Image 1 (cartoon, one colour):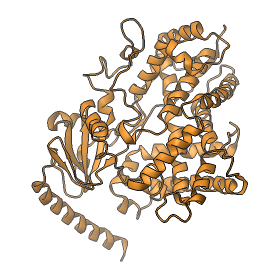
Image 2: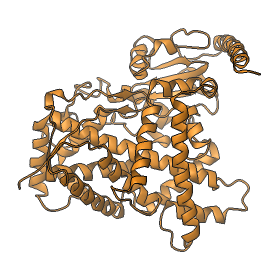
Image 3: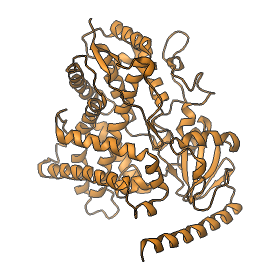
Image 4: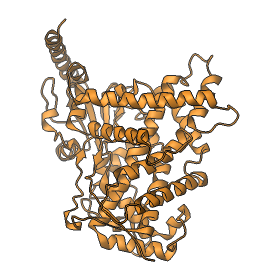
Length: 493
């Protein structure tokens, strides 16, 4: 069968599916939502550059739980803190499913922690959390790794000698080295060409995932897999990451001591050998490769992007940068390396970091959840097979919880006495059982790297603060800030 015949047949099948879905919908109490078109669903109604903006607007008409269609895929969108907390926390068992996002399914070959469900997810998540904690995630041991890496970052930034530079790959190297220590048991030089090549692939991959073409692939993977385009280059790049990871696993197999594990890979290989005769085990080679890819991608790009955005914010608001530096000078001084204990004595700095994360809104639609069984929620039916979108964007911009939701305002996290205050609607890492496994690591990295940089440098931009645009360059799967060449001037203490 040629390509044209295949497409015609696929179109007929999908039209029948749409008719059947419309008929089925009349018998099931689905959440309300806008009418859509055959095959396309509600795609033409969504802003292709920022679909979450359209979803937020639609919720004003259809309520905080609504149904849409991306092609023939049913979506239930959850909008606002109350609804998302109720679903992900209070009804966690119903909403722990992870949606089979086609881009991620293809990138991971269907294996690994990020997109797994059921027993696979339970085994891999339990093992991953306990192993990362054993290697110090969120503890003093990990803090020392981050502090050591911060010294490399400071030295590299200092080498720019107050000349304009792009901070993207310095920050990516720094953050990636932390996850590399956890997963691979080693750090890489900032001048390692192979390492830099991998970081460029990670950056390109996230950008493709966040582009309109990447989102189109998620809706029509069966079509785009038969056509040329950027998606083919993206998957070729991901294969290079797979190859790198498999080479590292092979090295570990040849050199590991089961009695003295060095990192995550060693621990997984040990468990794999222990359970090789267990027919139901999820400790298999394919899950190891894809889980390491999950950790490597997520542990590199999101944190480094947050720090890069923070620098842009501080350049745009130099008075905020100066206030932070004064607080850091008072509490830590010019020489001592910052530590996590300092955070409670740096309320303004902590507030700024939280506000940066809120404003960046790095994963506005979260990773999709999935109804692995029929769900009853708030009087509605959510049938098995439905993608569920917790719209984190709506929580981080909700007027009920933020005085000035659309502008940068550290006072969101400060009380009247200048003390740090928590806000329950601060959910950049999502919530519930599917919340980011690396949340404590990311929080530690952002704090220690930011304080170390501000302790040593003042950041400016040749374009001037008035020309710094904080709106994202890409914004769908992830919100990716614009890139600027900046100047880091050593502080005279």
